[in-house]
Length: 323
Image (cartoon, rainbow, N blue to C red; front, side, top):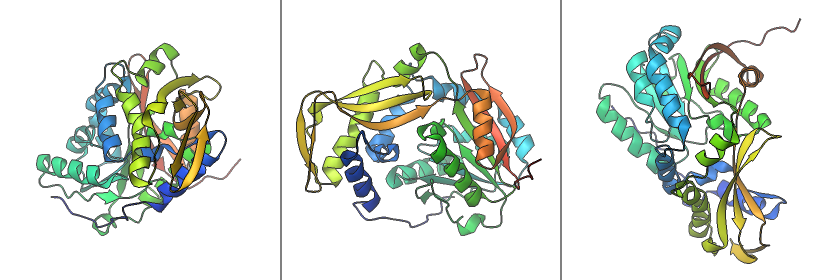
């Protein structure tokens, strides 16, 4: 049962324009990762999740399949399942089938992709109220009327939390508390620190799908912001930053290049980059500390046999008094 919420936006998002112009003007240059995920970017990311080098999706999916029953026991029946950054919702059926929620609310910034995914899921769960919300989930969101009185379980898979620096990640977790309400629970996926020999290929695959995903940002800028960026002047770069414990994705200029965006002129020298995405990796203590800083108390944790990825269930509880 698919219920539509009308939250359409103008063809050119003013926040996209502002972030791109500011990001190209700053040094070093950087554009927030969320703008990579237009419809084309979201579709390319779904292809990435099926690549042999990209272990997070299959590892997390296996964890959900193995432990969804335990999650159901801990969260109890009748909750509204609210998924942040739902994408294609490929992992969600494992959870929906186990916890039997009262409603499902997928939230995503890519509206067309969101609605198509919600419609496909509605065919598999015809009696479940599905309420897609097109929104930037990094800010608190007013719950749709259909779940206003229901207890809620947030779902944030894919280690998407790793795309954010610590300060932003904590702010997001606190915004989720506001969206879900006190007493809500959150099931979150977090990727673990591991060898760069495993990490780098996961973000720079042999087939070049991740490169196309990253370069799609330039296509979007040209299409939506009247840009004339020569795409062939850039290449995808993925590198491990040991100090920050993260994979970084960059668009590197392969030659000196000049271009315009929204009538503003920019120039880059060969080797200069635009930083487009981070993927932070967390040790077990780091993950729990991050959740607590974001006003979530860890309740249970599951990981694969190799300790490469973790699913953590947490609860929004009132802040305690310091000793």
